[in-house]
Image (cartoon, rainbow, N blue to C red; front, side, top):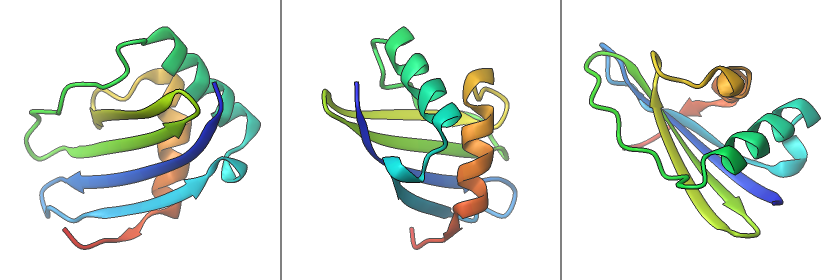
Length: 99
């Protein structure tokens, strides 16, 4: 599976701010690319259920791959261990967005 683009969106929390970014696969480190591919391969059902958490940050990842788009959503208490570093990296790149 080849990843071509990732769109990241962070929303929620007490203040309800929305931040996000879009990156190409070339902007991923090899470790992040491997972790994401491994996660997507292990979770064939890919799309995750929307978070019902209150006052927590919610992270949405839309991933374009050669096998089609995949959408993942986690709240800050349920980010899979193998994706924690990637989410933290995307947070550093995120900028304020419109709703």
